Every structure is written in structure tokens, then in C-alpha cells.
Image 1 (cartoon, rainbow, N blue to C red):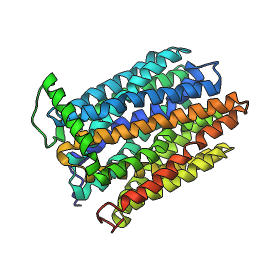
Image 2 (cartoon, rainbow, N blue to C red):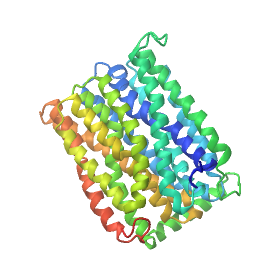
Image 3 (cartoon, rainbow, N blue to C red):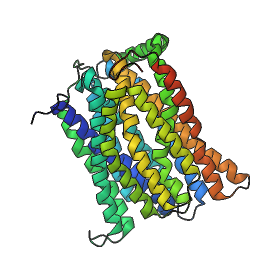
Image 4 (cartoon, rainbow, N blue to C red):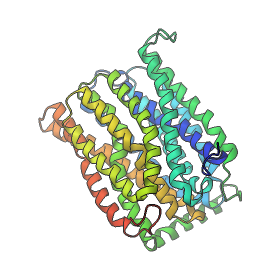
Length: 433
């Protein structure tokens, strides 16, 4: 059987990196860290306070990488190969993921610091990973390759997460002392999984910019000059600017839900085992759904496809604010799985098709900066809204519901602005936007 033209050594190695690093997003970021942080490292703390700590930690990590992203991208485009930066941030994120194994009960401060550095490694690696899309796939196939990689991420991250969940539910079967040790072992497994599946990309997908320069003050100065020039000229890239503004708004809600959904369920009194199982379901629903959005984009265009996903997210946010039972959380998890990979994959591919190839890392630096500034606002908004409502005398669950509902405005504004931005894009696959 002949494989499609977009399935080759480069694109498979690209997808395998997503297979590997998605374990951090599933097992740690969305899964075990929020549970362990609330029930083990913050044992005895008020639920609203622990939620605020987690929200501000995610916001702080996003702020650091948001400030660094365009600078790192500009330096990369000046001659330091993207994969060198990718390797550095991969090792940083994987090492600190493993380091969570040694954090003791009640030591939430150390857990916060280690998690923050691991998150910086994860976000930083994605900056250069995303920018490699223009090197591994030509324009006509980027929607498919991006969706293919995201679907691989859902499957790979989901398989390791399934094993980790099994370890926590049946620790005796794995020779472990209990669920706590199983979670700690899971942190180690994420780091190793991430490194192993990053190796094919390091050895195969060579970028178009092969000139190699040593990092120097001259190179850094040139990068800042290039960055300043792009800032001045960004107004001439009107479609890109409009898309980034829309992306900043809607991806805020997406990233916030990824990072805070389990914590939200815990605050409503749902069992951690049910929440983890629901998250696992999201992963395996997301695998075929991401591929479906690649197909849908070819039929109706990427902008329309993204707007469909945003509308679903808006519905999920309203639904979550009124959620009462664990069954309703499962329904929410399945619904998120249907659109999460699609909105991320098509956003990345749409942006890759718009930018100058010779400035791909720099422009993806802006892309990631926008996304991470959005990831600062969402968790911080939930934290602040919840604290204000709690201090005003509202019940803890009411304050939590108000916090999660506050991100709906991001989806509404992003959906509207993306419609405006779509009018500036040339008609491509699926007809005019």
C-alpha cells in the first residue's frame, strides 16, 4: 500500500516528538501534578488557596517563556540551528520532570519551582518544534502533517498516561507501595519517555537553514536588531497580525482548560480517580479527532474549522460552570477531546503557511509569545476571580464556578476576531474563508 506523500521519515520523526513530549502535558500538567499538588504537596491547605497557587505558577512559567520566545527565535534564525535549542529545552523539561520524584509531602514551594522550570522546558521546546513544521512539510501538506503530529501526541501521551493511571489504581500489581509512589514513578517515566522519542527528530529532520554559528554577543546583537525590525514591520503583515490577535484570545481559554480542568473538578468535590479517567478518555478521543480536523480543513478551510472548535469550547465553558456530577465531567472531557487537537493543529499549520520561511523560528517565537501571554491571563483570571468571590463571602464552589466561567469572554472575542482575520486570507483549500 502506497503511503500518502506527507507520511515520510521527516514527518514521522516530527510526529514522534509530539508522541514523546505530550506525556508532560497529559501525565504531569493536566493529570497528576494538579492532583498531587492539592492532595499531597499542599496537604491541609484551603482548596481555593491551592488553586490560586497553581494558577499563578502556570502564569509565571508562561510569562518567562513569553518574554524569551521572540528573542530565542530571532537568535535561531540568525544561524544557531533550531534543533540545538530544541534539544536544550527538551533536556531541561525532561530533567525537571524527573526531579518531581524527589519532592516530599507538604513541600509545595519546591514542587512549584521544579514544576515551573519543567514547564519552561516544555513550552520552550514547543517553540522550536513548531517552527520546524515549515522545514519538514511543504505548504500543501502542513494542515495534514500538523494534525498527524497532534494525533500522534494524543496517542503517545495517552498510552503512557494509561500505564501511569494503571500504576496508581493497582500499585500492588506493579510492586509499588501505594498510589503516591506510583505518581512519583510516573514523573520519572515522563522524563525518560520524552527524551527517547525526541531522538528521531534530532537525527532526521534537518532544517533549511544549515549555516552554523557559535552563540556570541555579535549574533545576539544581530538577533535583537532583526527582532526590532520585525516589530517595526509587523503592521505590514496585516493578516499575520490579525490572526495573532485572534489566536491570543481563543487559545487563552484552550490552555487554561488544559491546565486547570482537573483542579476545577477536585474543587467541586469529584474523585481524583474519576477525573484522571476522564482525562485519559480525552486523549484517546483526541487521536482520531485531530486527524478528522485535518480532513475538515481540506473540505471547508482552516479558519472555518478553527471557528467550529472555538464555538464548541465556548459551549464547554458555559456547561462547566453549571456542572454537578462526575458523569457531566466525563461528557465535558469527551467534548474537549473532539476539538482540542484540531484547534491546536490547524492554528499551527495556518500560521506556518502565512509566515516567511527564512524567519520561521522568529515568527513562531511571536506565535508562542502570544500563546504564553494568553496562558498567563487565563489561569491568573481564574485564580483572581475565585479569590475575590471567596473573600466576598461566596461559597467555595460558587467562587470556583465563577472563576471557570470568566474565560468564556476569550472564546467569544477570539471567534469574532478570527472571522474578521479570515477575510484577509487568500482562498485556499476548501474555498474562500
